[in-house]
Image (cartoon, rainbow, N blue to C red; front, side, top):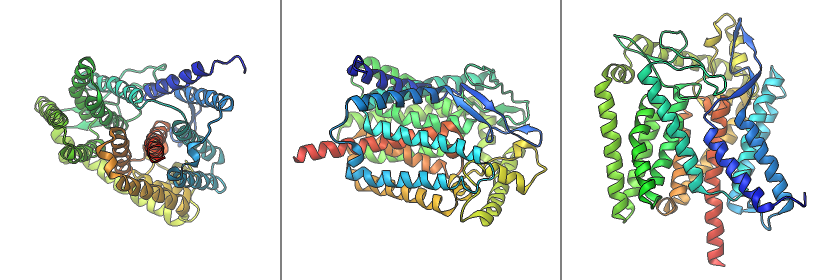
Length: 453
């Protein structure tokens, strides 16, 4: 241990973290247990180990070694501003752990608990280790840029190739179970990127788009500025080709909040830049709509067979969720066990019909009972109250603005989707965003305390 170079170890941890963020969308994994329902395999019941989980574990181990050799004089854990957040996060983990007691499948519940514990460890790492928001943003933006390029290629070619090493499954518009937009003339494949579903791609690109906008305003070199501006139409096309209504609506609301903030900023360069940004997004979206009118009209009018069927299925899933909640509202069915509870309710359906309800809040209530939901809602209320309390910081700290928008965007998407609770990528993405936001608060409080002292 005495031969370890601490500055080099610190740098290694930092850049491993950026690598972790950059590789996060790639679903390279070892599936070590498939579980079946009615002779079909379910991704929500199967156990796998992602490549990025191994990287995260390595980061955490190296961080523990570093902290043991360089104990901090004052941990952020004792920051009074963050103390209430940590308390709620610990209560959330406790409520998730309690749900294991009555879970139908204890191993499945424990598997999901480990994923959430990884997210909690990620928050502790981010808030207690020196990381660069600029480099972190570049890692996210470059990662999202690759996903946007993939999205464009997939939509133009109307196919997704399989790659075991990249964690991508083959998707063709004529196959059953593939996410498509069905117009009167043909079935249009929605882009997946390297992610499990187009809605997840849309949510990720919306998140990365926020950091892209921030980097445009903060970058000072012409080379970086030019590169970032060239990414705007690519990001717009990648996001649009996901055809994710939830991601597009959430991103549109984020743009409106950005606009309100920019109006209050006196610097004309930023106001003009944001105006050009909105024009670039609008022109790109308009051109894509003119080139591909069929899928856009079909998707956003919602009158065709598949669109109506999708709405009916979602309404039906809420009715099923209501039955499960009424029977298990106090203790829940167990973390990760919702799909099994759904199978017990309707045991004769095809495996693809056993999907989590598309609402994280309903899902938390169903799986962890009333305690888990109350803790999670308390966390959201505390986050929103803190954003309002520090609203003046939104005008001066771009990173606080970006991370606040991220969380607000996620809370909206959680109303109509479930992947922030049911899939490893979504779970980690939410906890990553929460950790970055808490890091902003911790840094502001530290600077404020040092200034006053």
